[in-house]
Image 1 (tube, rainbow, N blue to C red):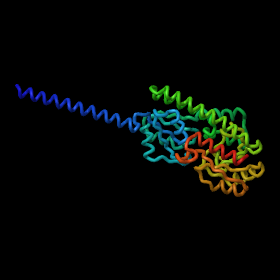
Image 2 (spheres, helix red, strand yellow; image 1 turned 120 degrees about the vertical axis):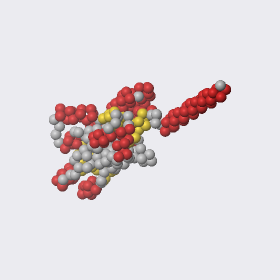
Image 3 (cartoon, helix red, strand yellow; image 1 turned 30 degrees about the vertical axis):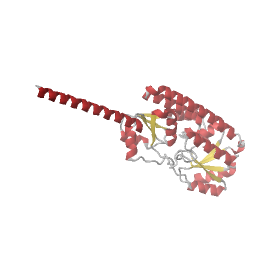
Image 4 (tube, rainbow, N blue to C red; image 1 turned 60 degrees about the vertical axis):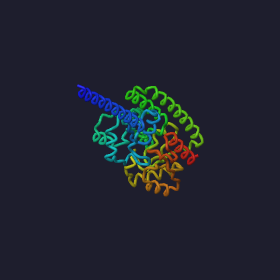
Length: 320
């Protein structure tokens, strides 16, 4: 009897020990998840620009990964198997849209998964295209605007992004809804201040000098908002991967000379050879901007706000 009682007590003690150790292991696991941020909402953004803005709204409640690295051209980007795995594990995928990220259709198909996909610029581009049709726009400058997916060049459009990001994050993570609302409001205020700053800077440029030539079609939204004329683009396409004909380049050079254009603005992510040739032929300066990507943390455009300030300062200095 005593022997049997002894065995029962021993078994009971073992069970208590096992449960205690299991509890400690679970607590350690929870601490590990918190230290790595794995308890946060897992979000993927296509570009560094989208990633930065999602992070501004999501704050400490989200962990954002950018598929396209800083300094890369989204028009030419090809995802790796690791990129596809990141998309497969995400709870949400934010993309700009409008044909900018041509690789995403096949990437999402390959990734499978249950991530919610939010296309930020779809309504903005559709509205712009409708406006163009309603006004029966004609001419090269108008073609440069219609269908241009680079809507983030206008901070007012990014305010629409912020609202869409806020709503999406609140639906995915209701527990942090108030945080997302507060972050969105604070960042929208910064965007309003940025818009006012741009208008002040542009006033330094004589009206007759507010003419833009770019490497590809990237400044439709910016030009429309802040009163610039788009004379043309070295590559008359929304994609930097397209190729102009000799006739198109000759026509652009003629337009530059005829209209007294002061500079060609080119993206840091594209091949600059053609733009350099046009600048050489016409005797005007070549100015590099950041258009499709932020820089790394140490660069001059490591956030969206810095990105816009850098570009506007360069444009103003070249044209005033």
